[in-house]
Image 1: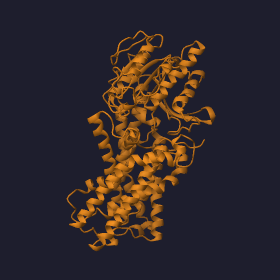
Image 2: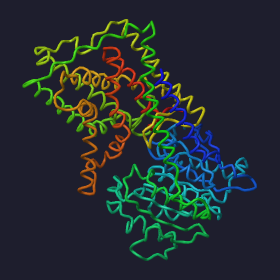
Image 3: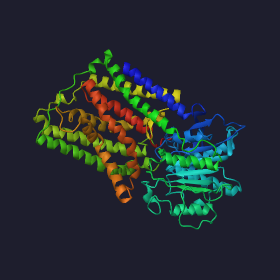
Image 4: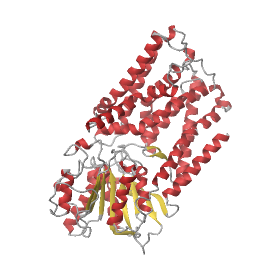
Length: 606
């Protein structure tokens, strides 16, 4: 109980300090807003309003648009840094992500700016936000959010040309996007200042005209600069960080080309500094806090502690619950350790482990491609309740297949070797009565319920969730619960197989030469780690990723692998508490799947 109280106290203190960083120590008010838009759609966003912004002292405003598979919290670092420098900031959940609605458009980023177009119109046309300087409205976005930002410059520029007026967007910053939005016919519509930031080592750079991430002489950038300067730029190279064009008539342009990878660009101080410096320059706020004085990472550290504490609290909560009289029957003795395999048994062990790793590795991308035909509605951004999460469908199919293969390999090796060499069924923890199985299901639901009730309470008090960069456990909408039963069984196959492997085939007496932690990692996430190794080793050696068409699916693994790395330790904990393999997968599947479903793109019917 003492440890429980200490971890709980650390959680609340970390949440409190994270909220202080987020609000610039009380200088910025942070609150959620919901704005109805066209076709019955809506946009949910976080509003960061500096208290000094008022009707007598209106401040510039910047709308932040996260990229594909990202919610408003993932770019809170940009909102924190801009708002503490006196800029009102609105960080949106793009359509079909976070708490915003789906969109009836299949090209929401291009046609609606992920909801930004409607938000700009609302801000510009209403008197409600009288603390905003409407002549200084800016937009920034990363990846697909960067495309939405560029389309916004073109959309409002086209209206400005038609009305012979200034664009509603004073300045736009595009991060991590080059392959779309840079055609000459589109760039001619722009009537805003433009900043571009692109990672030199962007994994998707093979889609650019020159097939690389170097912007120094990229045709897309040369076109942009030439058009922004009314054809007065006749050089074949541009200088990074230099402003071209005329700030006075909203035709300035500046380019940055940081030595980074695509997913980490929004979290690099250098790239963030370039973006902050851009808005300070175009809005004439150079006397503000310097771009080097960044504090956002302290919030990431505190919310990372929250993420750790939230998971650690599962342990004491479980111990408390299973000691209740009703659940006491679940506490069975831990089965005997398995005899150490020798000779043929050791060969079978390593062969099955290697086979499962290879299947896990080389099945992921083909299965991801298979989802395009299995789930055509979600793939084509059509609203549906039939597996509506496009990216998670790929992980689900992979998890189900590898779970089934894992179960087959386990029982195959048990039949041909284990049962004849001292491995008894009682050692595996697979026997359970119907009554105890029912109680196990109930206690797992109570553990999961306690986890998310506490998370929601923390969010209610501090407007903070559990996260580190793009790994997060966050509050979710009711639709997540609607589709949870759809996805749960497929993921459960993998988690059950993993629990059986961790507790029924790796729990050897005297070990086999490798530490349990290494074996856990190999058995659980070895295949996915191999994918990342192949992808980025190839990228490092050749300049092009190994899986080009599936590079976004590979990037998805940055948020999946860390969770899988800690999974075996929870599987082991639950096994040691109950002597059974079932409580671990039941509990962790629910938590993991809810985390996945609440952090992914979806196409729920409106």
